[in-house]
Image (tube, rainbow, N blue to C red; front, side, top):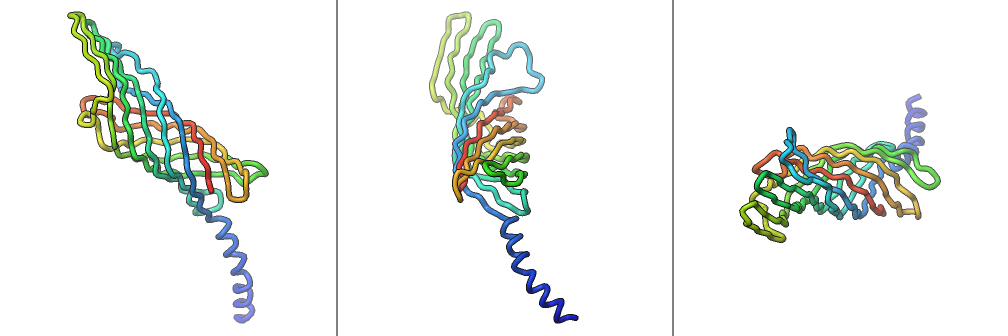
Length: 216
């Protein structure tokens, strides 16, 4: 009886190995993702000026690490530029400011994918975004009612911005198979910052990104 059981186990090992190979897959690729970024401040007041979204960009390496069928750990290593407008409009002063903050970002997300179809498989993504600031600049135009004016381009504001950025990531999209080992990823991600971008106020920078990637 024991011998038969051992033979059965040995005969099933290739099937278990095949199932594990199918369930656990790793995908590596590259991404270039344009984004729309903005600033938000809890309890903001009417003195704030224009904070309309500004176009930014993110690019780098992405990875999906499978740990079970249809379940993946989504991460990567990207350079992300979040641009935002932060005008100040007061009774005697007008200050137009365009901020450009660049981060090295490493997302830590759970990615759920549908079964593979003939052309595509769909996914949902949720998790934490982590970032380290590498550059911070500002373009500004200052004017007051006394006739004083000032302006500057690419002014270094690193001392006025925080080094670390944490965010909440939520997204969805699809992977399109165009070859045996080649998939195109398209999707949309909402990256909601919940740490202060600047050291002197409670403004937080967030963005919505159009995800474009290639997995090999």
